[in-house]
Image (cartoon, rainbow, N blue to C red; front, top):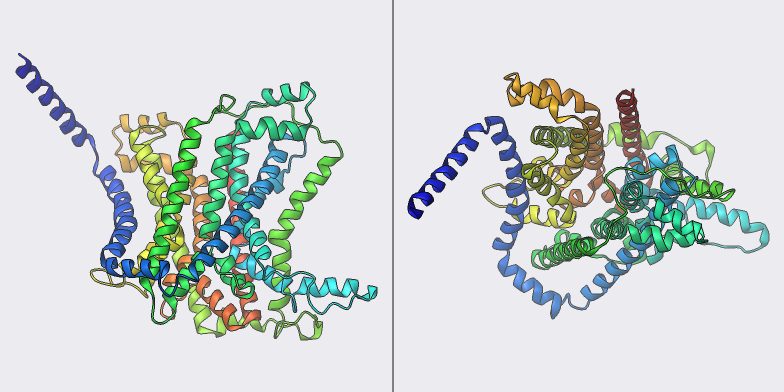
Length: 581
């Protein structure tokens, strides 16, 4: 009898599996095929191939790093990286958390400034921002330093340099931290929106000050979000390449990402040590993710809910104007001052702190936009890659998010796959792509195709998050009604779901485009004379001392980014008004 029952159960299971496969449409299979291609073909394949083909070099590289010729230099590089990442993360967590608390928990609401804060890294890409700060705070010819020396000259101080020097460890930490703040602000702001304010009100009723309540009640209640923001800041600091690449040489401070780049770019290339260090970065990031998961699992968050709460906000009195002023000051530091510095240098025939109006010219813009073949091709390539990558990623992730619905195992699995690249430092992706795609069967190193594939991997997480947000705002009944009416999956997606989600998908498209155009890390590894892009050309021009041309090109990137970010704000705010009405 048991045998008969077992056979019956087995037959039932096979029937269910067969029926499920029959219900799976070709369109669904196509989406899963594309997603698995990205996960397996563009993430796992490069990593595994690099390890397999470079196994011998990895062993030699490990010995070189531990006991060989590189062993004396590597500990210093690792220590520098730890100091920069720890300092920048601490600074970003303090500033980002304070601004998020002020915007969500106090009467010093930041309004439009609060909307711009998370987009600061998009308005002025880090590569443009750090170059802007370099031209402002160079100890000898920095424009801001020159202005400050002029201000104090009546006091008889007679400074020839300074008073600030951005080419220091402190300069690296502060600059990296400033461009990490938006990521912390996003995480903390979202957590504070879901925190029940009654626990804070109880603390204040018992006589605790707003500061004490914030430190002893609010932040401990959102410990997982705080841990996530610290982790995100650390990963951003480890992965950020542009700041140490521009400032590190002058400061004589090497960090791991730049050191790996030098190992691969110098002749002969030392692929073994580079791969060992890249894998070390990957292992460290994954261990941090595991630690965060354990912390979140153990954390107590009884006050957190799925929907936002409204309660009495902390009244700061006259101090709220100071808080708002500090938020504006942050935007000035990350956007206004760097742009001003870039503008002044870009209009000069050569970089000098003494501005002579008679010598100002637009020749540098004419040079980078029309006359120099390398910059013209780099702009063309970056724009084309930005359009292609943003369109592909938003179509794929948008279709998956809209087609799979809001819940279910399939949606969770898809979110895990699209979120995987966010846990891999861009330096690791660059190294893996070099080693995997510079040999058969896909010898595409030095072509635009390798940049296209790398950018798809590095930006798909941004696309997936934007697509999920857009899809979650649409009622599932609309798609179900269409399918009941015998419409195909593709027709339902194209005629009903996609138009409704279009504003959110457009915002995601702009975000991916801006990230692609301003990307520096993979560009430095994978771009060359035959496939130039903006990030690599900016670094080359900076290293060769073409400072006015660097400033002009950085301004072009900033203008493109800020225009598109403004369009994104317009689209999303208009969509919100339509939804509310």
